[in-house]
Length: 318
Length: 318
Image (cartoon, rainbow over all chains, first blue to last red; front, side, top):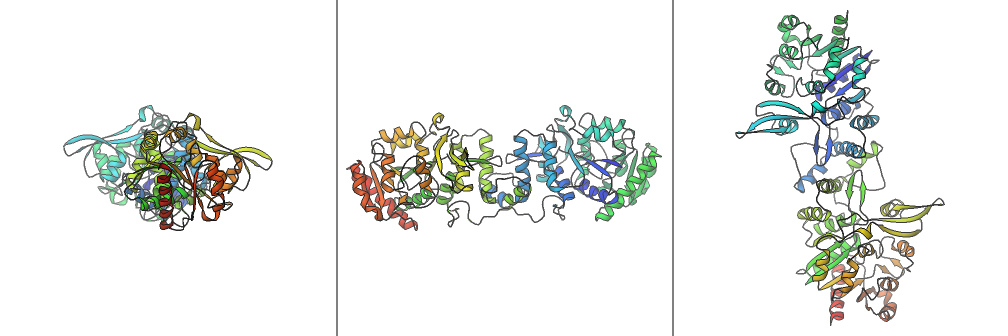
């Protein structure tokens, strides 16, 4: 079975770990969000790609969900001693090496997709990880700080400001001109199922869908598309998805996110058991819906969610 | 008193520490060798400039004479795990930060001299440290390895091969086209004395002198030029200077190095007490010579050497 997954960071990575357990023989292609990539200290940092790679490759810091296990912060300390920031972005020494290798390869002329493949040769994530695009796309967030409206990089909004101010708009700068990376459209065309993990529908899955050609390829592919709600009850499972949903005029609810994707894209939608009451609303929007436990408390829980997603895909295919 | 010092790495840095103690009120400008600069992992590494900066700024690893104190090697371990080398060059985590800041600033368009000044704002070396040139100069060494003649970067010759093969030639690639960095010629023109510390006469001081204009400025300046022999007895005090002296046809002796610089450049020369027998030979070449203890066993010993060098400068000036 060929499965394509559109993944952001922590939620996507943990779901993928479950999916690998649920479908050990599946051929999994992950289309990774690069809209939250950022240049720090002259280095190219790809937080979502790295979170997927480290999580599936056994190098992730389990507690925080991103960054490396057994990490130290000497380089960052020294950069701060030089007065070089930002200090709000927590790059560890082990993590720095990934960005150094990536930046060196990009500088040598390799596209990000080839660089990602090279990095994965070490990590052996057990999936094919492809960035959504080799072109630069950078998610910016329009905010008002101290009465002044300005656009900040998504990482600055998310990590530095902790989404503490309202977002007026989310703009994936460069997306309109971006092309899907080699292999992305082919993987979608050849897929037996496409899954949207419980990743952020705006700044993770939404950014991937903003690359011209990807949304259309998924909508046109004659395969089931099944998603899992990142909202449980009236709150995001993790992160601050409510902030960016508000920016695009979507209420923070499992049903509203399904309607945001729409039946043109989505065939099936899993909501948490506490949201069983919205199943009817989602189905009336033309999307098959089931309520199951959606908390990825451990790998087994994530694997069960993946099984349910694949089961729902079979159901809509039938 | 305005003192200009042409410095390589460890020997130059330790001499400078002594000079600062011997002449605490002096205005010291250090013209640093950049011929051993190397690009590693996409980062610009300036070993000699950093050794001077770390030594005078209190960050040096005293035992090895280069690199940072309290150093760790996580980044390097990780790079090796990615299969990215070279492994023979020992960059520590703290040291990496310096190269990251430097590379970022160079990438932003600042010349190396401005970058060095910015780095020194943290380290406060108590001297003005200027790279010999903002232009790229890279010392290459012609060697024969396994019957095949080839040119290797100086660092590869020195660090990886440990100078274990004969050097046929030493070529400061790019030197002919290089211009002295801003401030270099001015510092020489305004100097009261110019000192050559016991640095390598070929790949350290020699490379600085290879930048068109610097040798001439020193020769033309109406100030005493005094050097200290890096050779004691018939061996280099440290490093493998004999290997590179042989490549330029100079015997490994305190007298031969003085003659190599020549009386057109050098006014005074200090040799070690064990080399008292060569004083006459050096003086017959037109260079005032004294024999004193030249082993920099501690800062006080280096300070005494600096005092003797300044005394010899006064003597030749009189």
